[in-house]
Image (tube, rainbow, N blue to C red; front, side, top):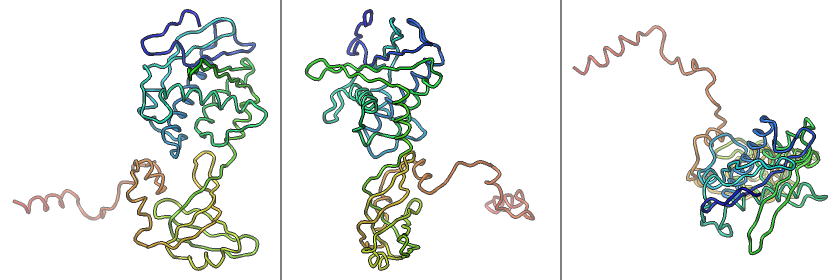
Length: 322
């Protein structure tokens, strides 16, 4: 990367992207492809940063990114190099030492994690199991530029300085993109506990099912083995805490079904207490209660009898104060 010098505390480059294919010429790239590549890479970096900061929060959602992700992990394009077209990126802001265990250079760890994810999908066996769905979605978008066959390979190179110089290399091809897209479509399974009331139990031999209605949020369908039948029957219409393995939607990360492994009867007064004291944004509250955006402002109108005159009512109300 000759000609690119460090600026203050910023590294010479944090990420180097090499773009290859019949539609790519020396030190040149089509503007639509450049924009798509830059947007997808930045999206992956921001989502990976949020996933590392808050592992339990979904990154596949609309809305602004966190302040730390924006300050520490926003990239800028600093050069287009020769050979096959190369794109050099560095951090837009000098890196700060954050109070996060094992992460003295947060931005570098974020980009390294993305390169490791791409490298893993390029191997014969995928060893990474818990990859954030938002990161996968951005990497799939990055791979979309390969569909027209003008670009066939996108290579990522991330310098590391952990004791000795080391570079993480990864290659995104159409095969890797297909593997990433397939992973996005697969649901994941994670341990989960839900408090609520058990309703609508079905004890048929073909499949034992019930539903739990949490204090906040939508009901979740549950299944259980025959040995738990008596416990489920006893817990019907009572406040309970069920624990087991949940199948999560790969996009929304919400539970689609929970396989019950343990049932506990809880105090009615404590039901949903954790949710009551939890800090939630307006978007999270609306999502939990199934409230969507207002589509027709006319829905806010009404509620006043048509035969009553609003002006007369206001005149009588305020006139009575004099």
